[in-house]
Image (tube, rainbow, N blue to C red; front, side, top):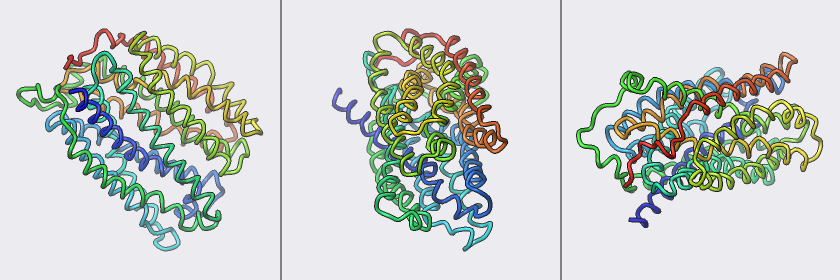
Length: 421
């Protein structure tokens, strides 16, 4: 049984890594392909256009969460995981082959938008399916540790996207990278997604799902009626956590170039190193939650993040050395780790198995869409208006609301609705 559990968790985690690699490749490469799809305007205007499409992908996440959340509750967790990766594969393939604005005019950004819509549907379902699968497959004693592999591989996917970008930066002149080299990571992602689909088809189903008798159809209305308080809290903490995550990971790479003045390759190096530390912190803090509970970590993350946002962004804006920027970026990332390591688990522990996938996915996707997917656009709009520091205070306010949500949550380690297998 333990061997089966381990194989299933590692298999599910590997698939999660590839899913998020495909999603984050867009952000990692947008500095290079922005001009191909949006040739007019300065660098900030071009990045703002690509960020708008990035946000549009988030608009589809609640739809994907609803559709695939219900699918996972009705047909099984591994069925939902397999479906999500098919959509991600299609989106990556379209971006890899997309024509430029010079070749297709407005059809080029339209196709880019459609590809991100497919990927948005995919990750909308992936989060709930992955969180539910890993949480149900893990043993109660080490549930925090094993569930942390969701964000370990999520960050690993982002790190892999940055790593591929870094290799391309060293192997190709910048002109070639802007002309065609940016397509390579998306082609790699499409191939990996096919392999993940085959892997996920062979995963074991969770005992919690198999123990269900009649497969009741989960629904958004049923979820809201039965768990309105949990719905609101999950949406609130997901929005705050996601806003901080995208501010300090995907947007930070651009901030280092566009505000701090680092070269694109240097910014990629800094973020690759910082994300590696961030990734390795996930299982450590997940294991800590198995000892001290979930809530102390959540409150540390929320309160700490609220206090450091303004001074950290201000300091990074003035950073001039690689080491200073790296050290400063690590501070909010390590505080954020106290949330991300157990973010999927605390949501899964709130809901019963017949509605768990939808309960995790839908309120998460709503909060993520409203505050996470828009973080980069909000930051760039503040910069374009000449009030860049306004974003630092905006992030502080969002994290303060998330901290309120953490305070309202029970310590799900003691109240978990995931039955012991």
